[in-house]
Length: 324
Ligand code: MN
Image (cartoon, rainbow, N blue to C red):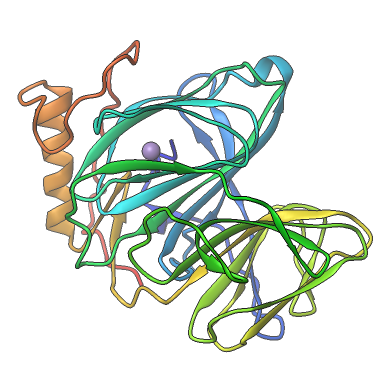
């Protein structure tokens, strides 16, 4: 999922100025996929901020009710230099990839695809559930790890409580819990549920950046209200994150980690380090897969998807610029 329709640097969404050091990133709506496109709310990347730790992409979608739950249908498309993290609140997605994985993504279970040197995958919501509701995120791989062979992992974290909150740590480490899935930089990703009136304080590494992707309610993060669908970002500094629910139940994702510290070039589904490298990834996708010249090339092949792979869009007429 989560094909960037355009160069993410073209985003028009604007970040509000920091409130007491907390940045509030507004979502912009982007149609995902074809004629029955699923609208997604993209909070990262933005002109004002490209990364939170190594997290470089956040798309929230749904709840899409009833008969629209089958509307995610993303044909095989490539990725490089990143991990895709799929997290569902509701629904079911069928995942197929060129590392040979065929999996059903279920609520409360992280599905992590490490693209490394190159992979392709398809994602189709099954309509088996009453609604579709979730988030897809990407993590940029550091230069030392971005050429690893691709692989797929899944994990269902055990929920536990801290203060008034229920935590599900799906990647990295938080509050003494550690996810076994692969992280290549210091990272955290966790669902946090906080009932109305509840408060939680979490000890975090003060050199790390953190964000909270609000799904439900309007929490205060470090005392600053974060409205629905926003991404509240706390830059490196505090050793404690304080989340308060206010008068409604809160649900959302805490993301964070050590700053990547490397400029990345991000275009369509590729993360690279230079314009020329991304152009080469695009050319290889078009020739090896779309034109069928080398089904065992960089991106391999996906079995079982009933349709053709997704051609890459045309490159913009300007050189892709590194972002950090
Ligand atoms: Mn994808």
